[in-house]
Length: 196
Image 1 (cartoon, rainbow, N blue to C red):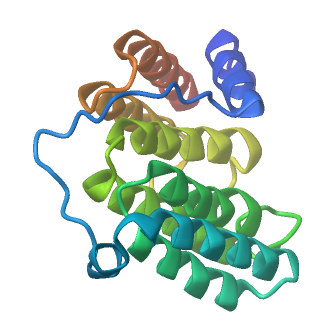
Image 2: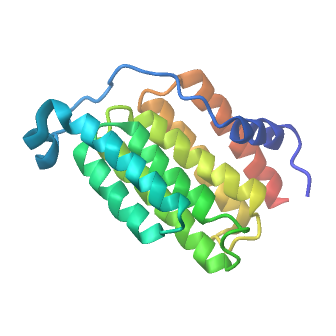
């Protein structure tokens, strides 16, 4: 099934790995630091970076449970950083949910949902929540483009509509409003074409 230009735009963004422009913190409410972060003070970010390196080593060695445990520790040390939430969500939704790594569609769906849940949690606590909303939309675009037969409730149309919703929310959360609107409009167009 051809989707035309909207799919090309979204696929290009996916292929390029949507560039997240650094934005100043836009939270209306301050996020409280974790207990570990308060105890470690100025070295919490450094400790989180070390833990992310350890998590990455575990992932590369195929030790997924250890990777997830170390990632949770890193997030507890620096929950305000959108980068950590993005890294974990991308590994869940892109790497662990890839058809090459996980042939079972139900397991792929579970990993995609885990990635979306991670992005949503990050939106609640990170200083740049719009970046995580864009990531959630990108996860849905990736799913529509690379795994369109995944047993997502509502099928391909629902996947595209969810992508549009995430992109719209990103604009409300401080991500580039024009880009968010363009991404959302393209996803809505793809959803309409998927209905046909």
